[in-house]
Length: 439
Image (cartoon, rainbow, N blue to C red; front, side, top):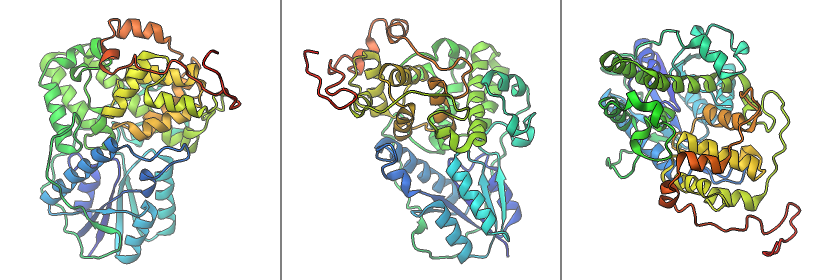
């Protein structure tokens, strides 16, 4: 009797899930577990309070939908309130588990946890699959240590590689063994509700995928992708892609069908182009590990940003002297989403106008964004700050020019009340000396 363990993370789906397929072929009983890490709900090193309510709701809906999918395959989803290391160790110590299945995650802490467990439990077979990316590590035409230092070089090397088709649907999974462990319990299903622009989970993600490609929006994507607002301006796949309730290969497969039926053009290519950006930052995060979070980045490029609590608070609240930035930040806080153009503008403002260490901005995005992805988020912030993969050494955006280009009539600013702000940015100077209003 072989018992397997599927360890879910940012891959909350049953479809196109190689770890489930492999487990179904190799073991007789199966435990499916998600570790709801305590640190995700606690203050972090930047003084921010874990996940926002929007992110927490989206995660809860994703877990609920995963649980429903597993139930349909004869399985249960167990959710643990312990750390991942404690959870997996407890299960391995309590049950005769012979196989552990995990998708390759790009986060440094997640990878360290997996490495420590595999070193400790040498009698257990740990299987890692490339279920979060377009390509497997074996497909890359270079060793990971030779990952190109810029996206352009990376793209030229891999964009012609074949992308595997999504796996067919499973009919059933091996049953779960009986066990009772403190802090690890079956997920309690909740009544489905559609109460948000973004509802988490595999069903909502697949609906967005089919709805988008049922229109001709993909043929005009490049012309609309820089718009600051509007549901139809971009694909809106990213929240479900980050949660893993959609796979990159599912998106590519649907794009291929669309191009076959409607023709390929620069806009349809650009959807694939942005999947490649995500791909690049996945491998970038794996390669650079903890240096993804260093102020000077993996290449030790000097960065002068500091920390001004008052300025940072005003940036988070959308209360800066820059109306467009304010509108974007208020949109983020209310919806959990911001356009790619908006993200670049507000990141540039934090770094270059406000003089703040870019890592505080990256940490705030981690708290707020429904589509938070460790590699894409921290890699893009490094890119804007000039300490990462940008060969130009950073991107400083002219906010007035960006406003003129993307919100000339101020419709977006007015919608999100960007004009409402405190005209005085600082009430104390950098040394905590009071600044009078007259100055």
